[in-house]
Length: 265
Image (cartoon, rainbow, N blue to C red; front, side):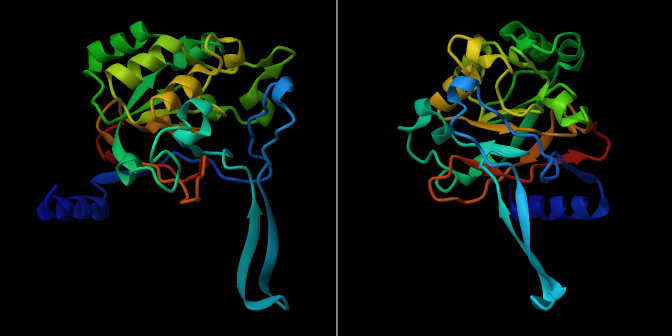
């Protein structure tokens, strides 16, 4: 992109010809977080909390600010390859060392709303992706693949997590699909509307947690707890997803945005 193209983009943003869609959820003490299966439950992620330092009062008469606390994988968040054991030996695999080109890239949106509503344990297959490609074109190399389920519209934390005695129940990926996207389509990573990038029953898949295991093993990234994917077109949007630059960070909460043509949805 040359300077003229950048100037044209700036003008389109100013005029509204390019819309900015917020794909993030609000962080609060009520934000649902991933709870690991019981056998791994000793390592718990902190829920989001904040502590007021001052708010235009005797603690600080002219300023308002807070201390905040949460796990790296809270709310709308970024998963770096170092997050999983299979990705630990890659270079430039943490939030402070990943190539910044990963943070601004095209995205495609694969609609599986009907399937996920019919079956909360729906797993996206390679055939499902190829059927989508037959309608919208091949997923481009270096894109993000976003999994549209409308799961983010579940208002209560209990409905969002959808837990019963067997654990969580939410859509995810067939392991072969993860391999296909990572190796044959060479994507940057995947994004989901659910609490994590894997299915709720992923601990029973082979391999366990295939999206984490295989995607990060291929030095790819993840985004979870996205929202407003229904406002994006199947192709043509640009995703902006930059994690905090945490030293050796395995991930971080992030504000995920999409640039969309005003006539696209």
